[in-house]
Image (cartoon, rainbow, N blue to C red; front, top):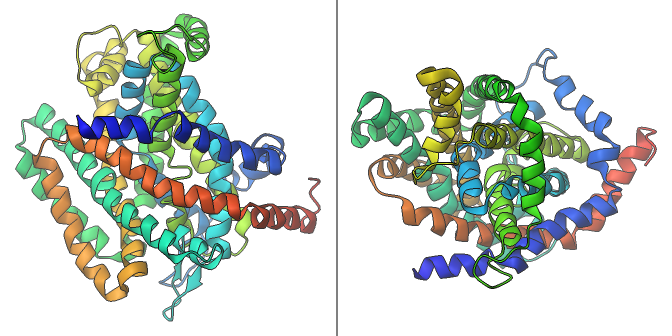
Length: 447
């Protein structure tokens, strides 16, 4: 009850307005780069995915490998369970506010990545190390704020980035194969240990293969469902837009109106999904070989586009066009599952369960890297081994306990990551704008 009240305060109108305002600020200052430079960033991201990989030394990862690992961290239960939760509680209009949060979040992510490359450091073994903690310290000159970010990031890496994900996998294996949560947790514990102790290179090897497959597989299933209900698509889109601006009061107050609920859950679940402004993804991007900050910034735009505009939209439209919300069930996973089953029968579950398992596991290993780097920043590299030992144990714990309260706690912890990061982005916005203008001028691109 207490945590629920805290959550209402932390994720109240002021926080939501702040999140949206930062994305809007960068959109204005960079002349809506996400729209007017769409061809530029799309060709420099998606357009490079199918080129032959360069040979790298053992410590380096390519920019596109960094984005796959970052996508592994943000594409998780939020894209399936988070979307259905937002729609069930916030109504169809929540999907619209997810889109708004994503469109503006593209520029927030763009700014994060630029600063993460600009202020990163290189260790003696040739590995790059960066993220919000470094641009807060080196750019903003406020180490206490950087430490606050890191503490929150470590805690979130155990909660949202680990226990919630392993719990979702445990529920799937229990439903499909009647596996005990402990057995599932033990398997995940061992796999997590093997991957995370191999460092960023082993994490990348897994995500580089897993992420494209799981995205493609889920999109395929979603398109099949939407096409089967194509006659409902226009009405569904109209409902999403009208409900997003429905100020009819539910309980006699403005805060309780439909539009505010839609905005709150759309923005918060959108952020939970794409992590724009949260600060975890820039830690991964900082490890790439990319030397040009603006180029890596474009990968941030692409990351949010794929995560929310594509994947979350597919989940939301599958649910709404199929009428899966018309149920008394409180199991949010069942809502998405029923949307797919309505078109493909029991076979539809495969398109939900398999991606959910892969999404969740990839999130665990990606977030472990973010938590590891934050541990390194506060206590030094020797303590990262301690962190790496705790991560698999959290995976086991998450699989066997009830996590209803943890969802709200993690939502609250997200705020303590987000606020230091967003404040630093605002104070360093001139640096982002200057670097972008120099890049465009250098490459003879009209701003």
